[in-house]
Image (tube, rainbow, N blue to C red; front, side, top):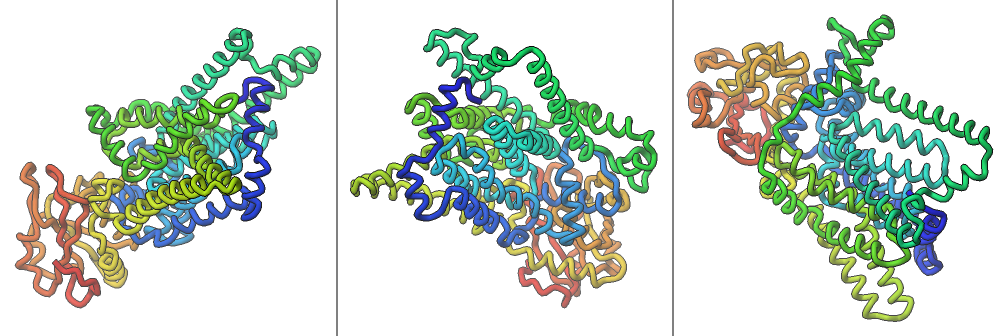
Length: 604
């Protein structure tokens, strides 16, 4: 990213620790040790009580499909579910750790917890204090913390893309090929997680253009013109090497590029190739015994995947301002300190010293573009999109946070108590704001509808886990039908159709059962459904579920009022599958459990 020998020396010298800074850090630990400690702490925050929250409906439906894939071996790409990374990884984790909420979120928590470690890849572009500050922001930001404990692709995508950028920067700094290939692998993994990996590329290209504009401006000041923006090292390389040497090195560069391209597509093909174990049609594992399938597999995993994605438009036709203001409300709750620090860090870096730091400017441009751009492409209001804003803005924010630290350090060294105390107060205020927001949003009120980070389809039944555990236990102990869903909203014409991914082919009733469908699938419960209340006058299964009420804008019927008279011998519980009622969506479900079966005490 450096444009000249002089600029490179300036930027690198800025990142080298001064004797004062290195001395103070050395009293406690090296920057590398501090980053590792922050990473361990980040992992602990993400793993503690990881399975405690009731599954969000998005978590539940995707986890159900993953469990069915693990059972049937059948999978193909569908853009509405996003990339296949979680599908393939979680199917392995389910076999190792069981099918449950903890294992469902495990890989997301792991990647979110390892994100602070990526700060070390930028250590030659940042001061030691800035490197540690960047790791701290990655570890503790409330939005990153909350969605590191949520089975979605957003945090994993952000993590691997930051690692990819870091590996590319390290390759630029060291010219060691291992960093190039690690960067390509991380970059390719991003494209297996979620389609908005394309937005990362767009933001990076835009930020890169602005960095190049930095070069042009600096060269203009130096009266060297546009041609002067070509790095001197590259110009000198052509001057100092003969034609044969230049040709050989160009050939080596082409070979390395081809290997990198092959690596990228090998990862893409492995993840996106369809699986069809026990079913007709091409599948990745089948192709090893029938190589003639490989052309079809490769075409489906590459061109076919691209065509499917480009043909899926989602539901993004909405006014911009309501989505943008929702973003701002989320920032106020989960990233206010970070965003304010980012603005300060960008301004300080831009207008102090000999020249702006590339990685700081790059992060700010990338973050602002994401903040302004994501409201355009979102199909629903959801705080998880802010993950892609917070991560890049952490780079300039780390500069400001480290600046406060150095301000206090210098005041302490000069015996300037006012400066030292002011810096400590600022750091304490930032820490308090971040800590209180993280505790409130992630641990204390992680299912509360008043929590800005909680999306509409998150169950508000915060105390429902004991009941769900009872339902799973009863299903495992029972013989025959374990669960009966009643009412048109929950009815499925063909329950067996829900056993083959994509499920829900038997009727829309399956989707209305979420997140309960996931919990029953996790224990392989026998599930059935009916529209007729008379079906409940005979011998019934130990668990019966229906809606507490119906909507006023549909033809759906069948509620607890219709069957309550038949439920002698059952205890009735209430389960809120949504955070709140909205429009034609009814939140509350009635769960009838045979007397003496459940130990939960939240009867309706």
